[in-house]
Amino acid sequence: MSCPGFERVIDYLDGLLESEQAVEVAAHFAGACSLCAADRAWYERVKMVASSDDTVEPPPWVLKRAARLFATLRARAGVRAALGRLVASLVFDSQTRPMPAGVRLTETADRQLLYRAGDYTVDLQIASIDAGARLSGQVLKEGEFKFESVAGLKIVLLSEEEQSAEERSAVANSFGEFTLPSVGCGRYDLRIEAGDGDITIVGLNIT
Amino acid sequence: MSLCYTNGGKAAPDFIRDMTNQPKTSTASDLAGLSDRELVAACLDGDAAAWEALILRYKRLIYSIPIKNGFSVVDASDVFQSVCVLLLERLPSLRDHNKISSWLMTTTTRECWRVAAQWKRESAASTRDAETGRDRMSEIASGELLSDELQALLEQQHTVRHAVATLPERCQKLISMLFYDKDEPSYVDIARRMRIPVSSVGPTRARCLEKLKKELEGKI
Image 1 (cartoon, chains in turn cyan, blue):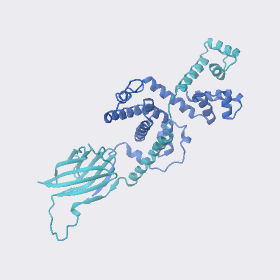
Image 2 (tube, chains in turn orange, blue):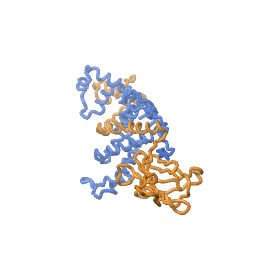
Image 3 (cartoon, one colour):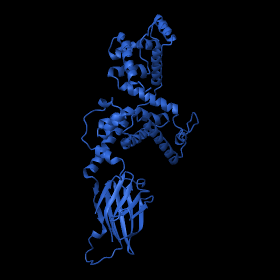
Image 4 (cartoon, chains in turn blue, red):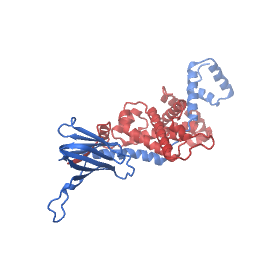
């Protein structure tokens, strides 16, 4: 008997043939036709894989939420790409604070600066010491109360003149606080290596 | 003095820059026939529909891993979202992958471990199965997740489903009824649902299965 063809093979395997036709196909299989044996193996394999498929479809809201990720990232990326960088303003500098009325001179040991970058705020304190300053600060992320995004961040201070040579670093504690105990006078960039990108304060004057 | 937000020279900037291209107008179903590599490239080119198509393609594979390991719908949904975030972040490095199913299975499994380990740390409540006495969360957290055979089967199930999804709509409908309908509809039922004569069901089925066979060539 010549090959019964794909349709008859699968009909045979699904028990859909009349008994006389089934006998003929069975006899053909007994003749070890490699072509029909391959069809048989394929169909049995696919049926087994499909019939054992008990995978579950996630609820529609889960899919919608995942699909929205792309637009969210695109929106964030758009801001960064448009500007080349996300520039934030200096929110507060204690040296520019007006003096109280009637006060001619005030000596404050520490200078306080507050910056904002995206969801982060960076609070810096510069305390004058012999021939330099002690730089300390705290990094906070908006809406976060357990400090998980800011604990352990690496803080790197780079001299603007010789960035590779003049590098000092510190690691933020579990509250996002850090200290660089002795920093020479000069102009620096302060880089905070946050999990979702670096925050850089450019041109920080230590006097 | 200014404060700027940069990305530390990681893989993301190119990707992020690319993603700001003009949005494309295709839909996820238009892109269902594309390969993984083509979909990833389209995502990196800023095509939101390609991202949706990628999610739809792998939704069952990702979601079923936590579900099969006893996670609740809410926890499985969180794992799903975490894996999608990782997928989106890693797209540039997956650009040259022909199949990302293996990467997704490994990543989803690791996410399950991470979540289970977190539960173990945070909750003293017992997660022991009342019937079997097995501590499912301990098993997951210690890495005893799906066996290699089950993972291979899961990947093959995904391959077959994906191949069916690339067939013409009529074939998709027919093969879904034949393979995935737990009620095992008769030819009469199938003919009624597809609005075709009963006598056409057999030949249509054969033609659709031949198309499926061609689609699955070398894949299973």
